[in-house]
Picture 1 (cartoon, helix red, strand yellow):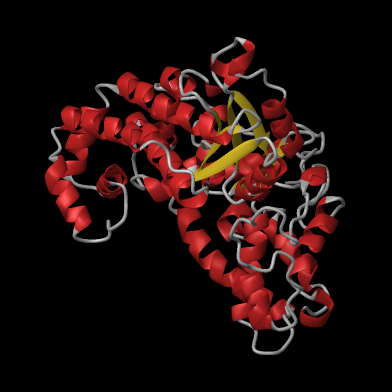
Picture 2 (cartoon, rainbow, N blue to C red):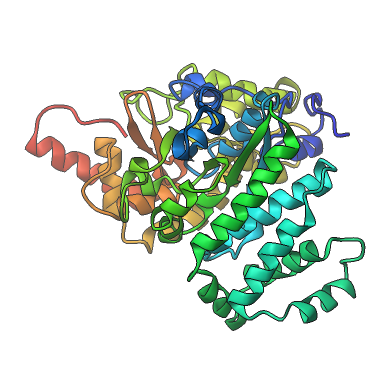
Amino acid sequence: MPDNNPPPATTLDQAYRNCSPQPLPPDHGWYVDLGPAREGNLRPVLERRFRAKPGPGAGVAGQEAWPKVLFLGMRGSGKSTELNALAASLRDAFEVIRIEVDDRLNLGDFDLAELVLAVAVDVERHFREELKKPLDEGLLNEIQRWFAAVTHEEVKERLRVVETSAGVGLPKAAGFFGSVMGLLKSSNVERDKVVASLRRFPGELVTLCNRLLQAADTKLGSDRELLLVLDNLDRYPPQVVDRALGGGADHIMALHTSMVLTPPVDLLLRPLGQPLSTVYAAEVMHVPAVRKPQEPPGTLSDPGASLLRQLLGLRVDVDRLFQAGVADELIRLSGGHPRMLLDLSREAILREGGERLSLEAVAAATRAQLTLVRDQVNSSGLIDLLAQVALRQQLGDHPDYLRLLFNRWIFKHDGQDWYAVNPVVLRVPEVAAAIKAAKAAAAASDPAPAASG
């Protein structure tokens, strides 16, 4: 078993490994509650949502019996780590199955029916492989027969291919759907034809999936139930997720299981269709703030700064491996974004020739990042919008502001619900010039002092 409480790194090579930005597993010793820098930890709120629900046995159905909750936030802000911690805190009452949607479905596009099919396939696999409590094979066979009838898929031929490769000892239907999910993950004409057939009958697929979900709940017993976490939905374009969760909301809500879904935060801020928050419960987790909104960029304030120092200190023996001021400079450049802090630490370590990480190595890593970001920013046509965010600390009335958020060129902080420009983006010369011009124009039209950035 992996060590869930590893000591801080004492060499830069180990520090590089320890600063991997992968989500932490439940109960990990490196976990730091960043809630005080986000205006509170949302995990207890999510936990109560599921524990306090009446459940289907109380004579209710739909959202009350099986809540569907959106958990939104910027990519890399720590959602997956918090969801892993949620799974640990709920393990006494829920069997939590985390489905990484981008690992199951096509990386650029997916349909509601594909999402429902992935749920059925992953639940069956989890009970068979992880819990050693296989579900009745007839349930998956039933979905297989429906799938073949709807898509005109040749079952015998696909099973023959599966059985001659890696399907030995696997229930036939499970092997079949393993092959089907591989097809759906691809991008070709055959996938498009299958998806077009599936989307014609989503209600039938939901009904079949519910039979499997009900059987899974029965296997768990009366004191536990399923909770599905559909993670990494925020890696898809907003219009793709909106089509599934917005256009297919009735079908998602009809699934007989509690769920946490992680769509792009853009969809909450500027809905493409029906606002998702009118259908689903929603919780938003912002980037930790390492300064106050009235303080200039580069300032470090608690509790955010001290919490991120703790995050680094659990992974790295900072006093031993970092020269004076390095940890604070990394935190300053990250703007509070946890993944950026870890990524920048790793990039700086790669550029360090000595035994302790220096400010020079951090500067070199920043220059390398700036080279990429500068070209992206300068070719985007969004520099004036960045200047307005720096000046007003809010979004303006233009949909392209959400592109800034999606690109992580700006961060949303809570408390006073304000926005800040990514500190690395602030160093793009053209952005700095645009901010200076915007401040000058604001000062000329209004003598009152403007926000600092």
